[in-house]
Image (tube, rainbow, N blue to C red; front, side, top):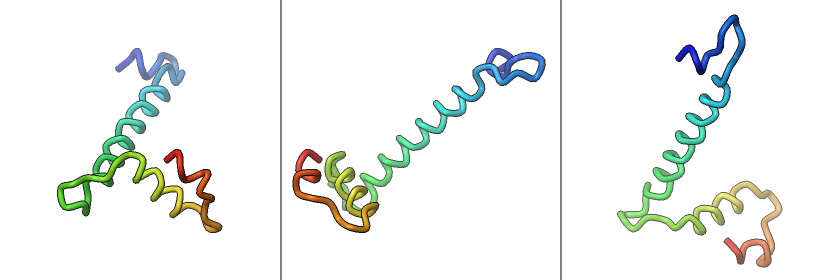
Length: 69
C-alpha cells in the first residue's frame, strides 16, 4: 500500500488505483443493469447503449445516430 499511497504526503499512484477501482465498479453495475428485469434473457450492450442515449437526451436522437448502436 505504501507504493500506491506515496511517501511524505504525496499522492503516488493512489488516484490511478482509485480510478481503476471505480471503472471496475461501473463495469459490474452495467452488467447488473443488463441482466436486471430481462427475465434471464439479458440485454445486449448495443440495446443498453441505445436505452442510455434515449434516456439522456431531452430532444431525442436521430436514426443515423441510433443505427450504429
